[in-house]
Length: 142
Image 1 (tube, rainbow, N blue to C red):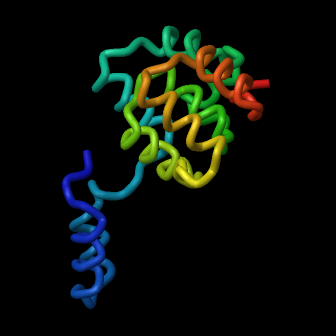
Image 2: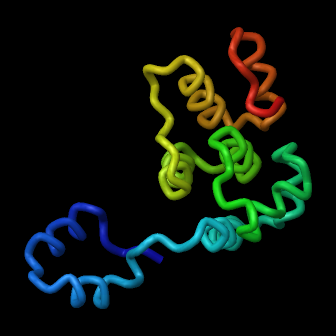
């Protein structure tokens, strides 16, 4: 689990002339593979993987591939479906997106704004898709 914020890591990196020492001393601070992070979220939130997958409305085998690491670069909408199914808050969702190499949700983007609102309201994937459709936007999952 990470204990230092990014600013502290930057400060340490700028002050340490030996990259080897920085890497060694901060090993716990580095990102782990996405499947490990997803497993951590499941444990922290006391969730069952099969329940999250069902509530995400992702194809079952595809979702298990994300959790196992066989699907290395899941799309942003698929990760958002998992975030909604896990009932992540906005900060947790933003972190998940960045963790997976995707851009954060941006309130100046209408589609992203709807997703942000859905997260804040605790909407399910299906409820979010209905809201997106009602507002003339592309749904999370086709």
